[in-house]
Length: 163
Image (cartoon, rainbow, N blue to C red; front, side, top):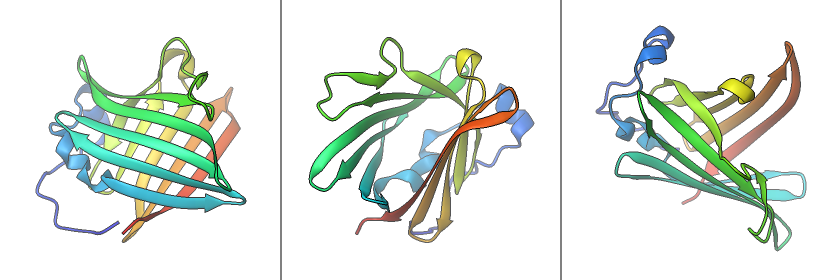
């Protein structure tokens, strides 16, 4: 990811984010673009864009020349909170793997010009998703699920900005 001077002050202390979300979603402009990564035999790509008052994303995982997984993201204001909604699908998009009836909802609890953190609420408490700039042109995503104080699932992704 390229680093440029950021015109929107966004870094809010965690206690302020509990009551107030980012004032302007454009502060997450650093997420925009096409991001590529690999893990073992799998390759993955995420495409993010700002549209109106939404940060929208789509992800695809491939093995060889076959799509194996798709994911849709939308970070939007929901009442007083900013919420990241996710739906995950198998390769044919005909069956939702997660979010069958309702999307997974993660509340934005921290954000600045280099990272954002979302946490699951209610039945998804213990789920944490973090995106951050690791270096210029590099993005990392970390998903952790904790139940009864123990990590039960963890996924880590490293992306390079596509040119």
